[in-house]
Image 1 (cartoon, rainbow, N blue to C red):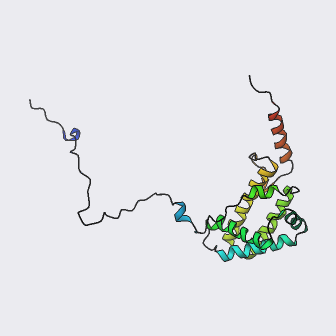
Image 2: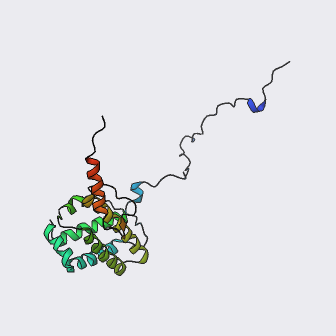
Length: 201
């Protein structure tokens, strides 16, 4: 009996990949699912209503409030290494980097705030209060919400670096972007207890 292979089990003949004819270009094939690259995102606002003028207004309004606040003005006056115009220009670049993805800010916020030896969590509460006021006064609703969200995230990171010795805060440690009472003492006590544990043999 003649042995015939079934169509389902037959091995297909290898086929050469299609090549463009000489003198012609390859077909334009669109790929779906490709992530947007950093270069493609650069300069694109995270909220459509945000532009450089809005960032300027927010920064100028916010720091105008800071300079009128007795406590915050004192902190900045003691520890600022730049004059106000230079500081404002730097902060505008910082916020453009945050909300417009311009990547123009290359400073180091944590060491800068470490110089404020007298800073306390309640100073961040006041800082955020004034920032929220400025955002509402100078931004659209969507932009204000984005700015405040980013400001609270930044405030949390700075507080963990300044008050918790870089330890990640436990769940529920923040309220409106500010460390709750008792969290610093609890975290530091746990750190000290852990540091005092004998090493395993």
